Amino acid sequence: MPSTMPYIPSFQYNRIMPSPGDRSALRFDGHSPSLKCFFDEIDYLGNACELSPTEKIQHTLCYLDFCKYKT
Image (tube, rainbow, N blue to C red):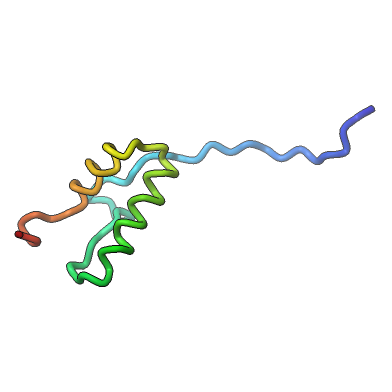
């Protein structure tokens, strides 16, 4: 008996974190209220790209401008 389920094509999405210079790259605006949102976006995108926690940290450091945000 044939299946009655419709065929749904499988799509492969580009699972690559954007480079820091890319227009779609994540950015932190320097204001403390938006810091949690920045980290949430890194976590969400990192999960979608199947990154390990260490890889997420490495990408987070790439997105920060250390000349602009000195401690």
